[in-house]
Amino acid sequence: MRIDIITIFPEMFQGPFSESIVKRAIDKGLVEIHLHQLRDFTDDKHKKVDDYAFSGGAGMVMMIEPISKAIDFLKSQRNYDEVIYTSPDGDILEQSLANKMSLYDNIIILCGHYKGIDERIREHYITKEISIGNYVLSGGELAAAVISDSIIRLIPGVLGDETSALTDSFQNGLVSPPVYTRPREFKGWKVPDILLSGNDKLIEEWKHRESLKRTKSRRPNLYDE
Ligand code: SAH
Picture 1 (cartoon, protein in one colour):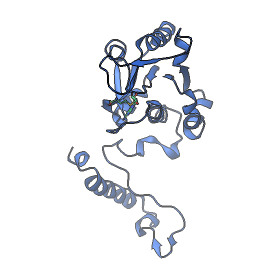
Picture 2 (cartoon, rainbow, N blue to C red):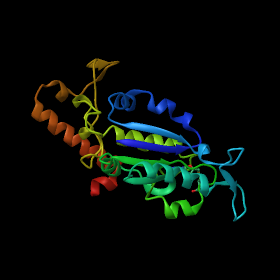
Picture 3 (cartoon, rainbow, N blue to C red):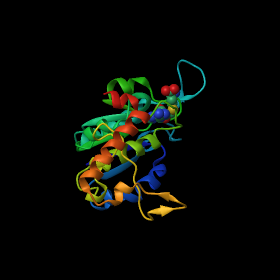
Picture 4 (cartoon, rainbow, N blue to C red):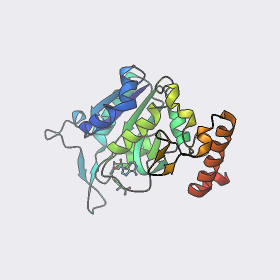
């Protein structure tokens, strides 16, 4: 899979993409991430990519030309399954969407800044708008990193059996049961006896019960579904 990210702050991705599972996926060649500095696509001598809003009011708007050039350039090289814009009013990122996107070959993620991007880009270039929650971030970079991480860990071969994504929350419509590790007792706090019983069937039943209980109390909507 190939992810092209268009941004005015490519350095913001250094951390999230250079550690842990995402790094391993890149090293194994299972995903390629290409960061594109939007300012490279402007002819303006000051590399300006934002301007005042026609509507007036506070805040700058990202201009149409550089974004259009960047997306046209990428689309001239290959086909994209989706041209994504990170936006607070987009579809909320859910596991089901990450699952779907993990099957794609190529995606573009455009990161907004300031007041957002010229609406005509959204109308004519963007095929999918994704929000990571109902709150406003300063820019789309953190959202793009979250979206990428949620997708990359699902690409076959990225996670080993020991961390299989199939047993994570939301994959079966439920949240995960609690987990414990050594020691069996700490400050008098004990691990549930059943987990030490060695009885696989009882342990599976316990996990399922705990999953249901947690989903009911923490995500009642999911539980009802
Ligand atoms: N004026 C806009 C917010 C702009 S925030 C509004 O009120 O809707 C600047 C940029 O950050 C946005 O263009 C978007 O790319 C990104 N962003 C902010 N919050 C986000 C969220 N919850 N999910 C995804 N992207 C977000």
